[in-house]
Structures are given as structure tokens and as C-alpha cells.
Image 1 (cartoon, rainbow, N blue to C red):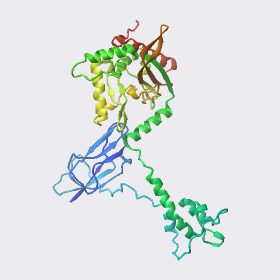
Image 2 (image 1 turned 60 degrees about the horizontal axis):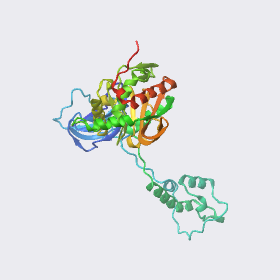
Image 3 (image 1 turned 120 degrees about the vertical axis):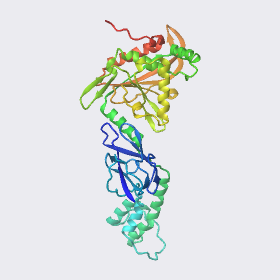
Image 4 (image 1 turned 90 degrees about the vertical axis):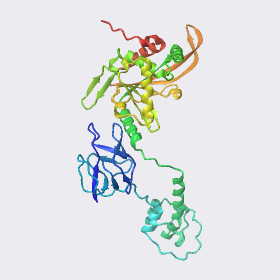
Length: 420
């Protein structure tokens, strides 16, 4: 028998480490070549890593949430004499088994008792707790504090009611029971994988980008009429049309006049990279958290093609089948909570982009039109812009231009006429 150490592979684009999300095998298991052994997360996407050889697992490195550097031992296999090691793989000494989880520490009261054992003695019935000033040595006060014991609830058996170490031992089980009861009412969830990545990116975006928020209401009565008409006459293989593809199409028309919003900020070089193509990210809620699949070259797509692509990408994101290429490269993002959209929101910019557009819930309500109160369908647009690079005036002007397109939906299908 021989051993083979498989190291964390280079997952591309400057990746220096990867986070363990979930192991699909454990020491003692026998795996086949190309069987998925572990799921890891880089700062770009989740990756399933297959076994490079067949064999029995001797040890694995890292528990979910741990990061393993590229080139470091990841898993050690025991190979049969007939098994061949891939030529591309480089064998290394077997890594020492890594404990995947630490043993929980005993309750603090139990630790105190173990470190400072006191010989059991036939003690008389414990006197009642003494009211007033508590008498205890500094050492016993410290032990009580570490064990979470309230000295006012402890009856001292020493002279004058002084609390002895044996009295603290008697109180320790009660403290441990309280700790156990509290633990039963709580659940600890380790922040790993996509949720950790979302947390880090959201924190970084909010910390480094001065957000300028702008909310405007849009009368989508005519847009709703068009949507219903198109749904009644849609192709047989097309799904129901939502507002989202119509909004994305309108946005691509508007960005022709506001190219400063179709930009990525390269902070490392201090450069704004303006894109001619419009790659629109569609924020999509999944069981794992928020993902942003990308509709590439949205400016070149027709309505039904746009709707089909948005639907395809959303389904792949929710089923965890989206590729890395489908999840990166957006130049501006649109987010919608659908029926849960609320009145207004303050979406966080999907860095390194400089703008994000949010759709809120569309509802019918009375409004004044030409001096008369009528019922119209109203939807708010909630947007955020990077105020370092998009002035408030330009942000407001862009949303007003988008509002005009949506309120006169025929213009969604008309390219912007550029002045000579």
C-alpha cells in the first residue's frame, strides 16, 4: 500500500486559498476517481473538487469554514498497489490527520471543581443563604465569577457564614444546569461559504462606497397593460412575462445617454473602466443566499430572448448549477423583491459597479391626474449610486429618464437618438 497527498488545486485568477464549505467524504471512506470529495468557495464562486485517484481516505485538512492555501495538503489517500497516481499530481508526505471539530469545553463550574478538587466530607445540611454582605475570600470570589455563580445565592458553611470552596462546588451543578438550559434555547450557525462571502462583500461595499440613494415613483399602468397583452399573445414555449425584462430593456436604452453609470471601479489602479457593452446582473434570492447571475450584452437582446435568459439564469442560480462565468462580469445590477418589494429600499451596490436599480412592489392607488383623482398602478424605483463617481444630479437624471421610458413603454423598443 502507498499514500498519496492531494493538495488544494489552483482554482484560477490569482486565487491564493479556498474555504471549505462541505466535505463529501471522511477518513475511512473508499472513493472512486472523479467522485466529488469536497466543495470549496473562492472569492469568485463555489467549486466542487473531484478525487484525482481511487483509494481509501486517511485524513482530510480543514473543517467547514476553514481556509486552505493553494498547494497545501487537502486530503490523503491510501492507494492499492495497482492504483496509479496521475502524472500531473505531485506526491507529498502524508499530512497528519486534522481534527475537524474541537471537543466542547466543559462548563466553567466543572472546570473549577476539576482544577481545585476538594475531598468529599459528610457535610451537615446546608444553611440558608446569608442576607447582607457576602463573606468570601478573593480567590473564591474569582472562582465564583469564572463559574457564573451568584454568591448571594450560596449558603456559606464557614465561620460566620463565610463561603468556602466546598460551597462553590455544591453550587456548581446548578450553574451548569442553567448553562445547559440556556444552550438548549439557542442555536449556533457558523458563517461559512456563500453566506460568509456575501457578508464580507456587503460589509466592504457599505464601508468603502459612499452610497447616494434616490427613490422615484413610476406610473406603470401602461406598462402593465402592455405586459398583460404580451402575455396573452406570448410564444407557446415562453413563460409569463414579468416587469423585470421590460425594466432591463428600458435600462439599456437609458444607459446609452448615461455611460458613467455602466462603469466598474478598479480600486487597485484607481481607474474607472467604462463599458460599451451592458452586462446586467440580476440579483436572485436562493436557498444559499443572494446570487447575481449576469445577462451579457443585454443591449442586443429582444424582449422574449431577454425574458428567457433571465429565467434561465435564475433557475440555474437557485439550483446551484450556475457556472462561474454566469456569475461574474456584471457592469450594473437590477434587484427586485417581487411581491415583497415594499414601498422603498436602499440596495447596496454590487462592487466594483457604481450603480444598482431596485424594483419595489407595484400597487394600485388613487393619484391626481390633470386635476382628477384616478386609480393608477404605481411602482417605486429605489436606486443607489457610488457618489464618488456619479453626481447626484446625474443619478437623478438617469432615473427620471428610466421613469419616462417605463411610463411610455413604446419607447422601450426605440434606441436613443444621439445628437450629432
